[in-house]
Length: 279
Ligand code: DHB
Ligand code: FE
Image (cartoon, rainbow, N blue to C red; front, side, top):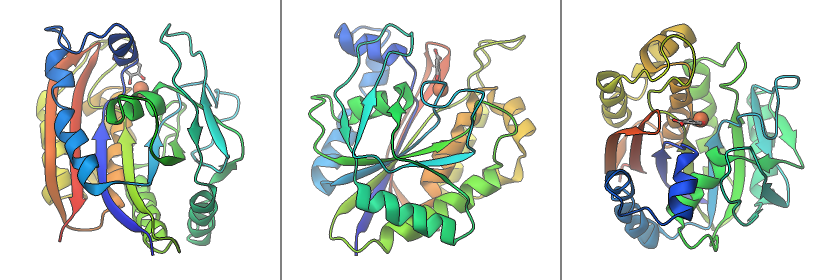
């Protein structure tokens, strides 16, 4: 059976794409952010994943407000990036791991998660930039399976539901008849709000409590409903649901491999964690 070797959790701000394009990794503004990544690269060298399941939220590139699935799973042979209007260079296309896509879809629908299956899908900054941070050469050494969770158009799925989805994704990966090694990448958050009266809102205390909870009390965030999460983390901070979903794939106990937290990158509190299933 396939092996789920761990999870990478990170923010996904578009400005990262511009910083990469302009080689600003050592610039004082960007250094504390990019300095978080070499330990992730060393960990990836060690665990040598073959496949990355990317749990992220599309921001209007593939799904727009007229058609918004709550949960969608990619089952395409290839995923291309496209211009989203942020003015950042596009990255090379990703190769899909279609056998795992269909196994995931069957396993999720079999467990009463009515996911939308997508045999064609464009991937936005929430997918491409975390992949570019993990693999700076952009010569992707892994195949991918995208899992999209709606955090753009209300009503959003609850933290409780996302946790359950993550648990089932974990079961599916571990029951995939393959000898491949799988990492689950969760992208979004941490606290940020891009518009409205509270534009620029960041909540460090909440972010740090959330990150800590992923290590020792992963169900902690499920006590909050969507409106409480918006209140605590900001309208776009609800993207932390991606982190929660990815964390839930690993089961009850995890080991913390690495973490970083830096305020702000653009309008966002940027967080980074690497978790591995407890031995
Ligand atoms: C920003 C953050 C996001 O999560 C996003 O999707 C777009 C922009 C920002 O802070 O600029
Ligand atoms: Fe976002």
